[in-house]
Amino acid sequence: MEPPMHISRLKLGDFRNYARAELVLSSRHVVLTGHNGAGKTNLMEAVSLLSPGRGMRRAAYGDLVRSGAPGGFSVFAEVDGMEGPVEIGTGHNPQEDSGRQVRINGTPARGADELLDHSRILWLTPAMDGLFTGPAADRRRFLDRLVLSIDPAHGKRALDFERAMRSRNRLLAEGRTDRSWLDGLEAQMAELGVAMLIARRELVGLLTQLIDTQDQGSCFPRALLALEGFESVAAIAGAGDAEAAYATALEHGRGRDQAAGRTLEGPHRMDLAVSHRGKAIAAALCSTGEQKALMIGLILAHAGLVRNLVRQPPLLLLDEIAAHLDAERRVALFDLIDELGGQAFMTGTDRSLFEALDERGQFLDVQDGLVTPLS
Image (cartoon, rainbow, N blue to C red):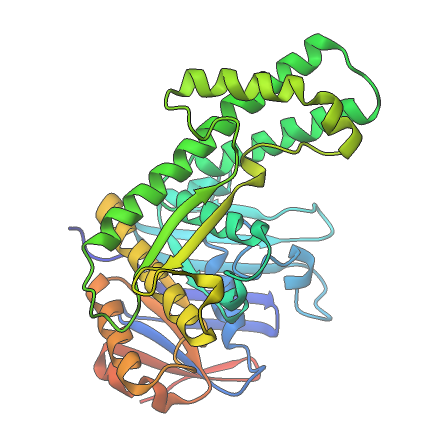
């Protein structure tokens, strides 16, 4: 296996509460401590923008710009990446466009998905604590980020499917039932939708195989995963037959979808069902503590899967990860993170929560937009 991917330098400009910040880092784990609101999570959010999408908080880019700043924000990182050392820059200028720019070694990237050539980033935040009890859309988004980390083409497929579906919905809403237009859009939706289903199935299958090999006595319970929904093709094995079945279902459902104002069947309606293996109950029915432990175990299992498939452990962003764990689970967590072999960023209000990391971590104090190394 190649030397682990890690960030060696991180620079921010007018990002959240940081006018300017620069962190020089080793390959060890990064622990950010300080009071609530100091800017710990903001630093991790900046790191999350080194991957495709809107980052770990899914914030509008304009909201990432420091209040009162005259322009936009910038994030720059030097990364020992999957293809060697690389400089990655990203930012947003609200006066120029509504998106964000990405540069790799000073050259504009073809798209944000090019970032996946250099790093894979996974995160776990307190906002995800309600994933098992919240809406299915949140679980789909979570699932697709897991897929994206092993299948970089998945993001574009999902975007293209959404675009085709919106066009079909608009035609139906306007009463424009031109058969050739609808047939073409539905054929595109069928091809993309089945490809999305296959990618999700592959991810769930691979992750299940890995979880099957895990120690049953771990502090973090093993999850049982299943996909639900997309009934028109769920039982069809071949991709070609599945595409034909979905295209037919879309054609027959035009009147129903027109009345509903939306497409009622497809990959956009799927759900990820998660259960506690040891207790054989749905994760949504577990206690809050059990749900947190299930999420941690699932993220760590997926990090192991990414490491096995791309031959590099992913970067982990773990926000307030130790706050609700007892001492035994904290020790187990840090050992499991360390065994993955990659760099992890962790936050907490109390440094004592991370004592078990010892020399494996580099500790930084964050106070009101200022970052200071701790001995």
